[in-house]
Length: 566
Image (cartoon, rainbow, N blue to C red; front, side, top):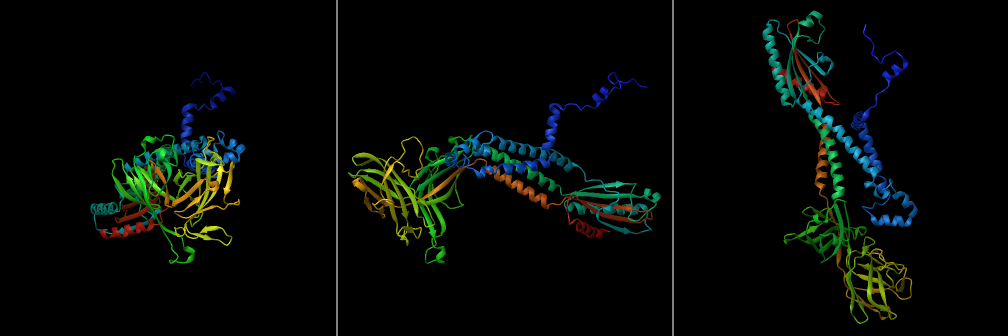
């Protein structure tokens, strides 16, 4: 009898010591975390959480996409803004927040944890032989048995015939894309009928095992690898991409430099020095409208096509003419220019009482309806006097490409092209509020500290100008002239070095998904059995991994092709 261990004295304390769980330690906890993250259930839960976590980003404005909206929200709801903007809520930076990033990274790790062991197992399966032939094929799908009766033939002849049959079956299966292996077993074979134990032990079998559909698992792995690629490239692209907005009137040129954009957003890792050096000039903006003599009246004024004809000057000084259309951007090296908006940019010239020009610019008017009734603002910060003192001038105007009178006596535009253009201007003098150091929108006029001299709400009517006309400002302050009304086009300029990677990963993911859904994984067996009565039985059967409604017919087709060889 062996002596018990020194610590095993049979006491309850010793029993507790033996049954008490050991602490996992760092390695144990790491294994536990890895196994949890490698679970497909965890990956699906994280994917659902990521979708839910993205919802707040669509409910409140985000600093990266709409900084003006964030500023407006702060002005309208100052107390609520403090709560939503505090750490860790970060409601105005959802996609850069700690909690969103944590879910994103966990999903990324989970996908890798799922893919890695499955990839290793799949690689081993690709190098392995097809599985062994089952001893009872009659339990498989599409089982069929054919008997070859030749009692006068010797055992050697029967065995040779069996080898020829199996060789032909191997050739047929290989042509159908199966991986095949021939196996021979001298014991344990069974015919379809019931045999005695002694007879069963004396039988031999020759079989070919075939398997195909490994591409199904390959597609599944490619799908998950594509998802990982999308996550990687989106994460990298969010820090490296750049997009800016620029509006150009006909004849105006932009340089692809940060200082020349109307507004711009970029990732934290973006370097302005990486912008492609080129220039773009808007030569002509053309629009094809449905005219009154075309179609029904309800469609008059609808745009049929937009064309921005531009001249591009590359870094080497060479120039070329291009046409930008909606959904047909201009590609210059790694930068894409998208056409996103258009309107009119009337050229307005303001002179003082002595006739000196104090303002001469093309002013962008923002369309307010389908017929391009447009609103614009002119700000003249210096050069004019009112009641003997220097003052600032503000003009709030409406531009009507085809002016018509409404039943209420107001103006509107009946057609978006220049058929009867008219510009009306409300006149304000005073403080424009642009000297306070607070950014102001160029499309809005703050009249809180200004006096209205003409226009709606006062006795003096608004100034009315046709193209080429000049009107006097109130109190002999000077004149304002509408020289022309060219078109303008607004462009979205985007540079995303990871766009190709995202596209490629998406294509891989979609291709892998299609393959995994439509490529069946199946096994086939053809076996010859020499029965105890001297006959040769040829057995066929198949087995699917997953749902394969065509397997039984595939076995039948194999039988039909194979039976002609014997």
